Image 1 (cartoon, helix red, strand yellow):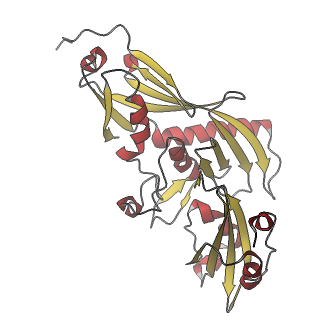
Image 2 (cartoon, helix red, strand yellow):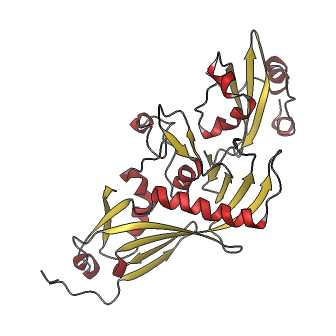
Image 3 (cartoon, rainbow over the protein chains, first blue to last red):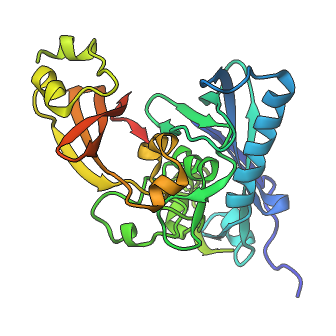
Amino acid sequence: MPDTQTKPKTVNFTKKTKRMNFHVLGDRRMILVRQYWKYNYSEKKGASKWTSKEKKAFHKNIEKVIRAAWGGKFVLDVDGDSDFAKYYDKKPFSVKFDIDPKNSGAHWTIQAIKIPKGGFSRSWVNWGKQTIQLDTEDMVEVNKGGGTGVTQSGAAHEFGHTIKSPDEYIGITFHRFQKKSIMHSGMKIKKRHAKYLVDQLNKMIPGTKFKVTKVK
Amino acid sequence: MPNELARNYTAKADDTYENVIAVLGAPDVLERFRMRRGLKEFRIELRNFFTDSELDDNAPMIREATWKLSADENYTIWFVEKGDTATVLDQFRWSPGMEF
């Protein structure tokens, strides 16, 4: 059945924030969330010095893990009285993520720690200071106490903090019982993990609201 | 202990819990847990101190003590319990703004 609604002149919108940029790409029915990361490197005892090849591979592998965990998972519907909302009614958008290294003007500063294979190092995100610490074992899924067969990659979990999803294994909400959640001890994405993204998107286009309808 | 002194203090490996609190005072938060393989990120570095077989067979109890030194700094020391004694295993200074 042909579209009765006229396609608006403008279907692409961009919003730059302190911690990430949002691109609404109407023609591709996609929301692209892009973060720029500035890397600092160090090694823990027992690990050899970073090589330039390892630094490149680290970023590539971290992005791969994050995209695999989070990319294309959120499906958003559009609602509202704007021409954009009327045109994209019942035409869902998917959310993709992109992380690019950048030396100046980055959103986040990353402390990348090289550790011995099979070792453990604490990773964290400080939202207020826009800093992240990750290590060379953070691409590996490990047991975080979520039960038999439940594992989690540090990089995928920490990325959730950069889109303002809190840890769910602490606190008083019922989320602390959902051990398979990526913000608890597993890798499962939930609708609530898109809350911050949707809040930001809903400030971008007047008369237009996005809503997560499902997680793929 | 005055916060300024606490900020410059570093617990020595194998120092006892009693010796540490004699210097720092009682911690603001104290937890105990049995050491195991599946640890959350905040505690994950403790895995470096034990082999898998040590964790499978009668794993030790850990005492986790945290002092809130300032609005921007917490100091956590982990002690491993052996019999009646608890000795320093690991330590970490961190900002309350960090999420693990």
